[in-house]
Image 1 (cartoon, chains in turn cyan, brown):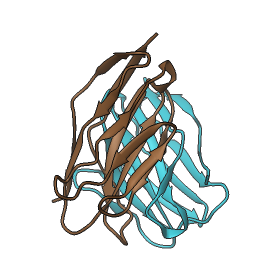
Image 2 (cartoon, chains in turn orange, red):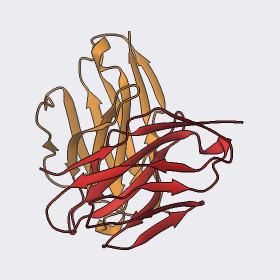
Image 3 (cartoon, one colour):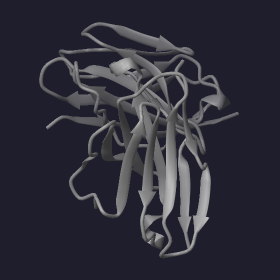
Length: 115
Length: 112
């Protein structure tokens, strides 16, 4: 099946710094990618839809200036957590629909710990 | 709005037991239905899907049937293994759309 990668898999940073997470579709092009946040023992919360060539669409309650999304190419979307705080510590997952179809492929996730 | 409801977990079974994880949905029209599985420390993987009423999705011994009359998509497996321990998510997406709506997830633990 299609492969989506994320980098880094784990990151520890100090409070106040910014962290960039990359999501890549390795063997297909994705004009749309999705970013989720998952708290321990909870379901996935959709944060935003990343659109290649245009602005991301954020879900209600998600701070645009806090979570910057850039869909730089048809295979790469980045999520930057700006001025990170301990409450931003979480598991961040991206996904991409394969060839515009319904089935989505998920990245392995990035665990962020803000000290 | 659309929603997906799964049975609350966690679910703990012994190896070779029969598994059912209930999933019901609320949606307009005829969404496609999915089960995703998340193994510890990993992202989600598609387990199976069904795109129309009465379709049965199956994979790795798991099955789920799209029941429009009961708006359900229950996940079943006849004989579970320790390696099936994971979190299972039921989800839907509308035809032509790409945004998934997830259930809350059910954590399954299989003991040897």
